[in-house]
Image (tube, rainbow over all chains, first blue to last red; front, side, top):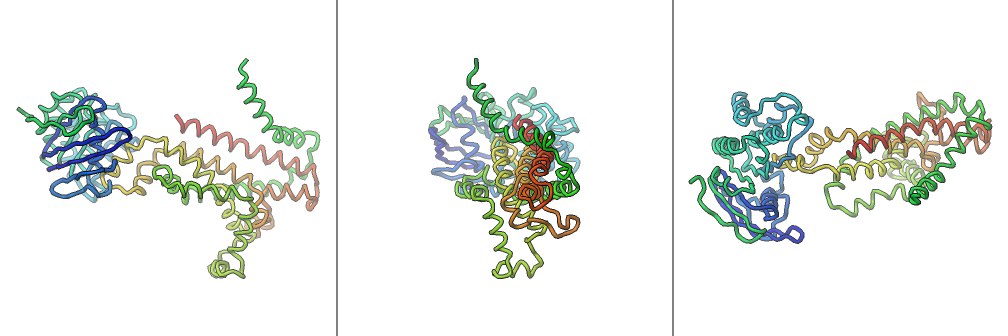
Length: 206
Length: 260
């Protein structure tokens, strides 16, 4: 369960946002409405002027980025020097986890990762899939996906599969989208308007 | 007519006049066999060896500082980095001499550990590290700043510390930047005279027993303490320039590549 009530001042931009939910949360809004700002605040990269962030009942508002156990995935979050297999297990190994080989293979298969070379040589879409797999295998409290589903040719399928895999691993996911319709692929939908106040919640998966 | 280009090239040529003069006279009218002699070659070898060691030390000791300055907001540390190169360079030589003097507590301590700077390769390299590290840091810092922080944030989100992120994520993808900064700081080390003329006028250690760094040898020719005089000084200077220029140019070539 993610609970966030945050006020963030990023330059001239001020954001007030409130969201809560477990499973998969879709954060929808047009460009400049504050989706990235909110995700970066939850991940700990932007200071929160007021409010709190709790995940699984643990208050991580004042925790450092490394201690939060919240992974932010964007289209540029990949390690170009690593091979695919080394990459997907990087975060897990860092934490001393040993993911089962079958699970790794299944995760790669579900996300359509069918390449063995160096990640820097992959297409942008494949890099994003590798990053998503890496984040999930590291078993964080939450994965925040900032536009990293964009540009995937089978985007809807991947969002659904990723949500399912995350649920099985007890990892909450928030993903941003410019399309409110993506809310149907999530357990919850929040809509941000013009960087404004409280996001509006409505039922998803209906 | 592009006047800016004309002025820029004219000012650049002005800067390069001393280099052209030394190359012309050193390889031409003033050419002297002593300037290419064994002593000069050994001096250049010592200078290359000690400068290379200094760059290795720069990489090991100062890469974290450059990264810290690039990703942090520590203005005070940023200003302090420039101090060693902003004071007259002989001061650094004197400082090392005092630091390691048998009459000071630090010197007694260091000498007790068999750490001796005076006329040793260690002293020479230490002085070169102090004089080249600010250049190294100032080359690496903007390089790190120019890199997209997203992969680093990704690693930190998975629990990696900043230091772990530096070594596991940033450095493996910084080869051009590291090569460029290393070559540029090595160029700086090759050209050092002020500090090393005090702390390591010559080295009394194998395999460079009795050998002076190249800049000191050139000064020795010039001052008449070594036979050959001005002609040998000019010839040795030209030889040193021929060694240093490819390193400097390679450093800048990698910097352009790193900027892409």
